[in-house]
Length: 243
Image 1 (cartoon, rainbow, N blue to C red):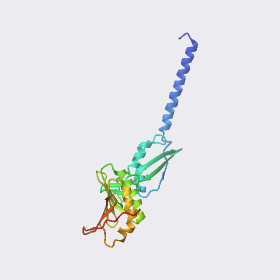
Image 2: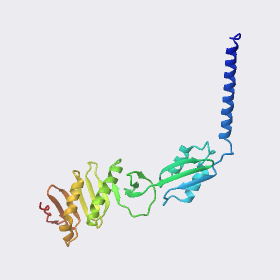
Image 3: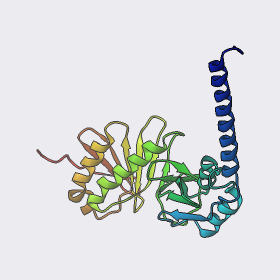
């Protein structure tokens, strides 16, 4: 090869090219890690009702490490999402020195027993709240099922001006509701929406006109429902609507 000028020229050009690439790579590393490119601005967006300015300042001061180029977005996102009321965070670099932070808070739908809260997506989270919220209790892992079930029942009952304040789901997937006024409604397993729909349809003509307070309603009947008064005496079971 040493007696082949063309091969020698090709090799020399190759070595020069590699040297230039290595130089550019080293220069790029220096620029990336240079303190000349700090993150000088942090813009926080989102409808924030529970996340405080002090919490955000703490994250910025203690968790944001690196320059505009080296800042670890995944680590920074995780730091923000550790705040109790933060559900999701999106980050974006804005040249030359800004970081945009968009925060989505949890919206509390209900309490999960005595150990946490559920958001409107059926996700469980741990945070403090003084808000009056309904209580949901069910098997572990049924959070989303119960959240969506509660929303459906709440919408159905709104027609008659009643609200559920406690909802249970048994391990066998049987539903039970407690309404405002302490009325217990036993729904059961099968076709819960249809059973509650029949109750809502009959309510104005039956329970709404009973003068005595009612403590318990059992919807697990094929053609109607049973009613119990506070003293334990059963009221007459309302007949189904004639068709």
